[in-house]
Length: 175
Image (cartoon, rainbow, N blue to C red; front, side, top):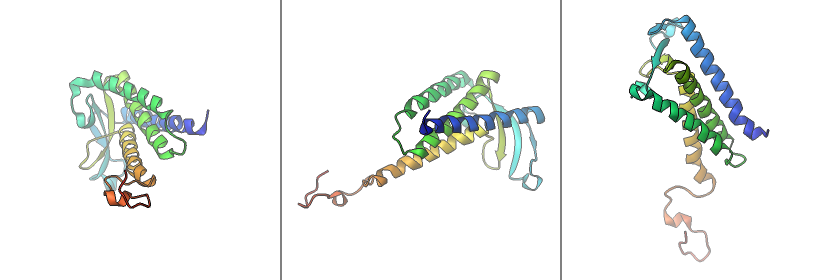
């Protein structure tokens, strides 16, 4: 297996292990719907809180749990399929897709095992989340960052004025 192909599965595996291990610890050690001060001086900012979530982000649409199960499965398959077409040298894209794949599979496992997703990290002013959620969001942000930088790296800026795209010696605007 080539190193570039290994990136997807290695990153996804690390995310999956961290996600499932943290969820297992919370399930075993914290009663449902309660919190634990993991770092007492930070209790007003960060605590572990064991809750379950049948819906999507922020607990939205809990009645669509089965739909989210299929979406996670489809997204995982699409990531693996798309990954093969990524050009060499696109390590940030590969890494970001590994994060997203690991997160999608982590939450998919919860939905298949329990019918709900286990959430555990509470940071003040944010909804409770888990390692899988963090990996998915981080992966999407990294992918957006890379995609926003890609045109500039190729020498063509997005929404550039026509005058800055002159490349021939005749002085005419040709795009």
